[in-house]
Image (cartoon, rainbow, N blue to C red):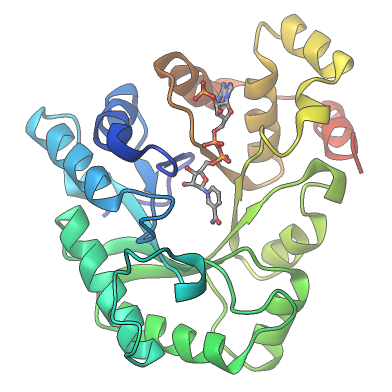
Length: 273
Ligand SMILES: NC(=O)c1ccc[n+]([C@@H]2O[C@H](COP(=O)([O-])OP(=O)(O)OC[C@H]3O[C@@H](n4cnc5c(N)ncnc54)[C@H](OP(=O)(O)O)[C@@H]3O)[C@@H](O)[C@H]2O)c1
């Protein structure tokens, strides 16, 4: 069983390159892999093929890995559904995870995430029903941990006030202009929830291209992307990267060895908002 990883390799939008890129990411050194049973954006079976190839090549076995997948409501899917849309939500959750385990050729994942609540405004009855079904999957041993994605502070506060079990992970797009999702991160800190941040580079061009940040990176003999990932970890964010480049994979992992002075961490945290 793998402990929580320090970086997650994201497998979205890779289509027929998914298997090769997943294998490459493991070869380069990633041990955490993020996917979803949402064929519209992910090719989960391709992730499974990549894991199998890495296993055969002696790079990593199942026990070395942290695998995370997601349940996606029909609204977020195309016609390639991993469940019967006429079944109840709890049945859809069970069918989706069973299909993920088949794709990944494993009998458990490390984290099972609700891809997004059914409403942007509130934690609905449907979400509560899905969450309860996800808890049952966890209790049956088909996932070690649970998470929620694309959530706001009100979603989390509503979960808390309804006395729902809180997630082990929150996975959000992290906008620098929102203080890098300051409010949600602070709720996560208070409740010992690990915050996973995605689109750290693509959502924040104003920071990545900010001349002072570029100059600082050069001074540290690092790239702006490395500085952002290193900053993320310094403020407690578990970063995702979806790079398709071997060189960027290496650079992203190498950012784990960079230590930023505290005043620089504070400066980046407030650079855009
Ligand atoms: N929960 C959700 O709703 C949700 C939504 C979106 C994404 N995700 C997850 O998050 C993962 C990552 O998505 P993302 O939006 O953060 O990234 P991404 O868009 O998949 O990739 C990052 C982009 O930045 C570029 N880049 C340039 N330098 C880089 C460097 N040093 N390291 C990394 N990228 C560099 C990459 O180009 P190169 O390929 O040329 O490096 C790529 O175009 C996804 O694969 C998915 O697993 C989850």
